[in-house]
Amino acid sequence: MTFFQDLPDPPERPRTPRHVPVWAGPPLNELPVTIHVGKFLHRTPGLVVAVTSAEVFSTGCAVHVVWTVRRTDEPDRQWAAVNERFFRQPPPGPGFQVDPDSGLLFGIEFPDGQKTTSAHVRPGMFDGSEAVAGPVLMVNGQGGSGGDDQLTGSARLWIWPLPEKGGLRLVAQWKDAGMPEQSIRLDGDLIADAVTNVQAY
Image (cartoon, rainbow, N blue to C red; front, top):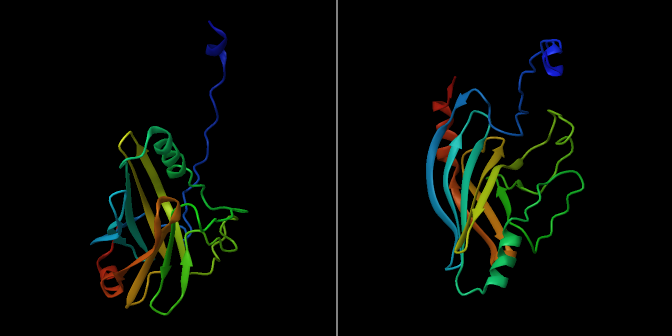
């Protein structure tokens, strides 16, 4: 018998049900309604940023954004610097300071004029509180990959609460990559109407 064969069986570990605060992300037990968006936020030879679709849940909306940085005539050293800037996207959190001249930023403006950004940390967000005042724009599921010719990334933006009917303006800025403030309109009426077809698991 070896040393590790003589250990006692571990005790049963109690299960902790997973819970996502309503402001922090979509419900875990819903099948959303997917809406095609297919709009460019920015399109140049060196950078493309586009919104592909939106998923409507009973409590909010998840907007899918993709981006590609294309190598044009940059020499190796300059392309390496582009790579470094591309992957330097610190997540927002306590004490996180946003440099408006660097990094990819997102914002949303509701039909009633309320607005917020992906870098706006609200009280209660990092202590598990349910009592966070909206509106909230969270960047969930961000990722990316790179190579010698192009860099690609994607993110899911969680918008809470579910917007009322009317125009919803999505704003983006990425000065480091040569993208000034740009915006598109999302169909708030379509989003508000889609919630009736959301299905619970």
